[in-house]
Image (cartoon, rainbow, N blue to C red; front, top):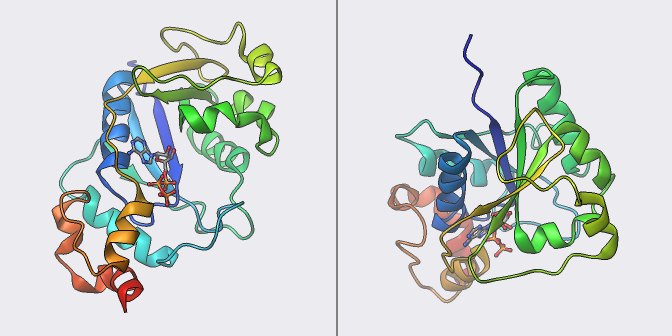
Length: 213
Ligand code: ATP
């Protein structure tokens, strides 16, 4: 029997989704030969509320992901009450896929450097590997606690279902949702930073356009 592909997840606010997210997810899918799911957060801890509500962000994600099946959408955090702790999401995914399939949490290198502040962060490794999305030429120093914990877990190529750390080099695209929201707020039209499909239905963009009124 052939092994199932690894399952990798990229969490975020996706307010709105843009080519930086999509290209990073795509390159991770290729590097790991994985299925990648984008997992929008409902109530992200430590952040102001998103401009678009959950259904609006999901609608834009669906539009962005149409026409391919390598990247998918997973709305489990939106279906859950309370804060979206990553460790809970990974436990839920692990329960769905069983103990053997490789599960990979994708995080940017900057977020990874702050991992030791996440809720129950050591437990993440019981459920999943961590794939660190790395921009060539940039470094993010790790705290002693995190460095000590991951020493011996770093690998070139993931093996087994969970517990390791791998760097995934991605093409840097200097696109951020903050800049896209600022463009809308200034009455601009941030085309080609987001998929063209996201501009096909004005109703999907209404919360962002409203920033400019
Ligand atoms: P904001 O500007 O609102 O903070 P964002 O564009 O950084 O948003 P998030 O929804 O916070 O988007 O990001 C979700 C995930 O995608 C994070 O892990 C983040 O590191 C990653 N990401 C965001 N933008 C890029 C990019 N341009 N290239 C690679 N990864 C990105």
